[in-house]
Image 1 (cartoon, helix red, strand yellow):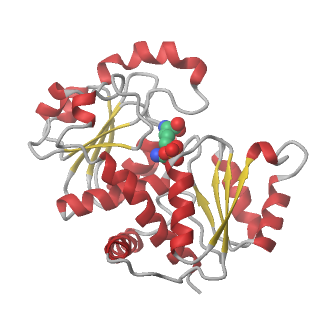
Image 2: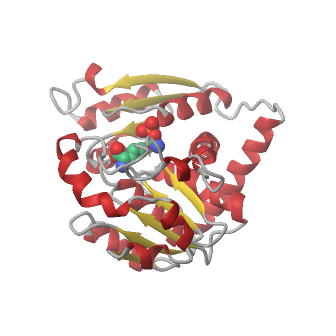
Length: 303
Ligand code: CP
Ligand code: NVA
């Protein structure tokens, strides 16, 4: 059976913990200038239906640092779903490359790819999940706090892809997870059901103050995700009380780490003083995309 990474729960907590240790080791090696050849002779295709900076660059650099090569495809240069079946695309990619990393709107499209490609498929963000981001987030907190189990992880804002994946992964690793969202913007029932079976607590709440009190990790994401641009005005009015600012941070634990997957709109979901302040883990998070994804590709492509 081919290994895929379509959701953050595709690896067991034990596998995830081992992968995070491997990401930390790869980061140390890179800082020492060690060269690796894990993906020598291998090609990885990157397919994007939405814009990307971090995911595109971190996967590209990661593959190349492991000795492999990247082929990038923008959806506009394909006929996927509009003249070519997704399954056929996947079948053909499996004949050319050794792994497929795809950013899509519909998570089900990734499942079709995984079913037919015969090579590992990695979710580079969908409308409902962002598991590659969640891995980097877990690495960042493990580095800062030495553990994830027992920490209070609070997400404030849109109950969307990032809240779902990072929340579920932290809960799977034993954290006490709360997602505070305005009415109508909570996590889906599917995600909430998944959260019920995990090692840690996983709870959707509406009250920000209650969720933030004593938090070890405070996370937020944009209020207007890719594909939701026409909802901008409505969303801004609903989310106003869910901005992370100095007052919010003061209610959290004194050494609370502030997280944001980026791209951010400073002044909306997070104020500039907090985003660029001493408790921000945001830049390490962005960097760790590189290390965590290298560890993931090594794991999925190990021969
Ligand atoms: N965080 C993240 O996935 O960033 P990009 O959309 O720039 O890839
Ligand atoms: N929720 C955001 C995350 C971007 C990395 C979006 O889907 O646009």
